[in-house]
Length: 95
Image (tube, rainbow, N blue to C red):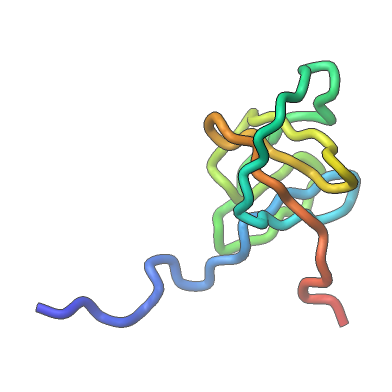
């Protein structure tokens, strides 16, 4: 039987996090870097559903509550599992 052609998560938003009133979106790129805990900007404090975009600082729509994030080369990296994933800002949903 053929599977229906529809997304597994309807209405999904891009994986994102809000830091300093700015939304950062995952690039999906893993960075081979080491970041000391003293360099962390913070940790993900709450998680919203993937169908929503974060609206508060420290909030993300990825299931990594308490994951650290840090600045790296004018972007943001989030420790997802054992890899630092690059997040960048972009014009998303702005007029």
